[in-house]
Amino acid sequence: MSSLWADEIIVVPEQPEDDGTWGGGQRDRAISAATGDWICFMDDDDVFTEDADEILRRCLQQKATWHVFSMQYLNEDRTLWAGAVRPGAIGTPMIVVPSRADLPRWTDYRGYMADFYFALSCKRLYGEPLYHREVIASIRPPKTRQP
Image (cartoon, rainbow, N blue to C red):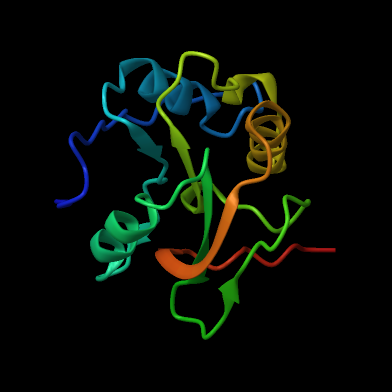
């Protein structure tokens, strides 16, 4: 993957995590290794949109302490837009935060709602994010739950 807006791309190999953090340890290691100004998260089954470079370059110039973008489900005509930090409306590739030592730790949260709790902690620390309707990433469709 290449990106014109990124100073660096940190790839953290997936490792089994049976502590319920759903990749939180990998994200925490990436945060610790980051040396750029902004951090954008992506899982191994997500992809940046073709115009993510342009969108990020433009939007990150706007004065904001952190950003929340929209995301689209792969192979579906459905977009998730978070007009607020609320459960079920925040996904990993939507969150763009400054590279700061006081960022929350993903491993402080467990399970499927870790993205929401990470974003909620960012909101408590840095205030309301700047919300963008622009889509920067596509994610796999959610698995249907069996009764």
